[in-house]
Image (cartoon, rainbow, N blue to C red; front, side):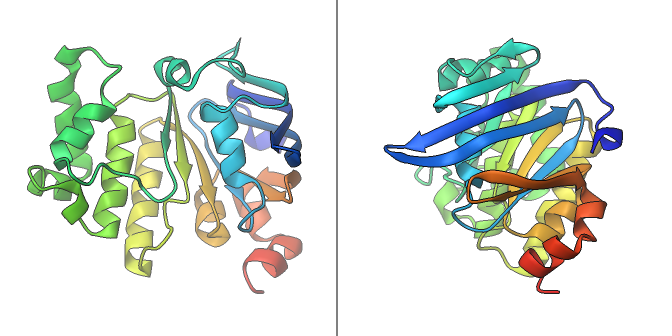
Length: 241
């Protein structure tokens, strides 16, 4: 993994444990994300993927360390982590259906200076042209794929230093999944650091600089994305090969 992780780490998770009541959901998690990298975390449902994302974005862990840009953030509130530059696209999109597309984007920019809004909005409309076309529609009227784009654009309006993507392909048709992953690659090409959590191991590892495999709350494999994609254990468990 090290030769794929030369860049300065922006996120370092060390010895992280997390509980749901008496149940231990994460066991000594160690991950590292370099500035500008696309890092993928793959695993089955219930393996602990979303729990790890929540620990990074705002839920205090039971023990262990989360360092972001050199600072310990494990005890910071969720809003302070957003202000530090961590923005999450939640599983299931969770757009505000009764609000317009543009008002959803406005909410994403609530930590930013007001004078930045117009320029950032135009950048989102350039990246997601369908959102410009539908900017006055209620978000609840969008298709699933369009809602996923809106959720991504809403997070990007916060100008994240680290973008957390939780199962962006969930519930989408294959054509839309390809489009979402094309956009993820484009974001990486713009220098955005991305932590991509996905059940679709093939799609995620194919574009990842570094990949991690999580099983029952523990990291079991890590390495460059393409190498994990070729790993027999990963192929048998997640790719049906």
